[in-house]
Image 1 (cartoon, rainbow, N blue to C red):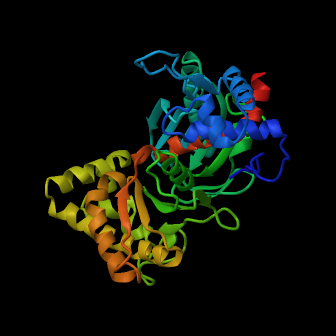
Image 2 (image 1 turned 45 degrees about the vertical axis):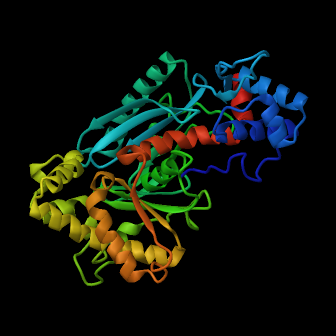
Image 3 (image 1 turned 90 degrees about the horizontal axis):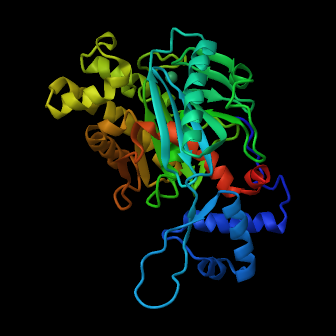
Length: 412
Ligand SMILES: [Zn+2]
C-alpha cells in the first residue's frame, strides 16, 4: 500500500481546534441515534459554545447536516440531531481482479451511491490496458457522484496481490502482474490525482485488506477482532485486531492461500506445494465439481456452484466439502496462532458459506485447542462479494472522519 502515515498518527501535531473537529465528528459518526449539540457537549466534556462552533464548521464544510426533527408532542422546539452529510465528500473505490473491474462511490455515512462492475478476463491484457479500462469506470463514477452533489476526496484501489509502500504491485500471481508501478501508470488521470490534505489521491492496497476494512465498517455488529477471508481464484485474508488492520512488518500479512494444507501436495503458482489455494481456490473447487473452467465464466462460478449445491448435486457438494475441509485446516492454524473468535467468509466464499461452514467448523473443533469451551463463529461477509471495492471507498471516507481538517481546509 502507499504510505498512509496521515495526520491521524503522531506525524502531525494538530491544533486544539483540529482535534475538537475530529472528536465531535467521530462522535456523530459512531452514534446510533443522531446526537444533539447538548448530547455532544455532555459526551465529550467540551463546552456548549465550543461544540456549537465546531458543529457550525462541520456543517459549513458539508461534513454534517441537521437531521429532520422527530415530531414531538407537547410544547418546545425539538433538539435537532446531527448526522453525517449525504452531499459532501465521498470516497472512490476501485478494484482490479482476475475477471472483473469495479468502481464504487461511498458517502460519509457509508452508503454506496454508485457501483459499476465490468466483467472481463483481464489476464490477457497488459497492466496498462487493464488500468486504462479502470480509468473509464472511475470517470463515470465521478460524473455520477457529481450529479448527486458529492465530491470525490480520494480513491483506493484494491488489487489481488502484494503491494509495496510506493503502490507498486510487486506480485499478483493470478493476474500475472509483477512489479507494476500502478501510481505511475495512473498519473495524470483525473479523478485519481487530486489531493485533499490528509487524504492521498490514490492508495493501492491488497483486496483482502480492503475487504476486511469494509467488513469492519459495515455496521455496529462487526466484532473488533476477526479474520476475513476472500475466496476467489486466489485466497487472501485480512486480519483485524482490536479494530485495526494487522498488516505485518512489511504490509504483506494475510497470505492464507499459501499456507500448506498438504506439505507434499499439488504444486502451486507460488513455487511451493500443497497450498490452500490449490484445494480451496475457485479453480480447484470447479475442477473437483467437474466444471472445467472453460465451461463457465469465472465471475459466475460461485453462484453456479451454490445453485448446484442447492439442487443437491453430489459432485458440487463433495467439492465444497473437500474445499471446506482444506480451508478449515488453514483457518484452525490461524485461530490457534492469533486467538480469534470470528471468521468471516467473503468474496466468492460468501454465497458458498452454507456449504463451506460445516467442514470449516469441524476442522476448527478438531484442531483448535480452545474450541471445546470457547467456540469460534464462522459466518458469511455482510458485504458479500463487493466487500473489497466498498471497503476501498470506505477507507477514503474513514480517513476524512478521522481527520476532517484537511477536507475543511480545501472546502474553505
Ligand atoms: Zn502457493
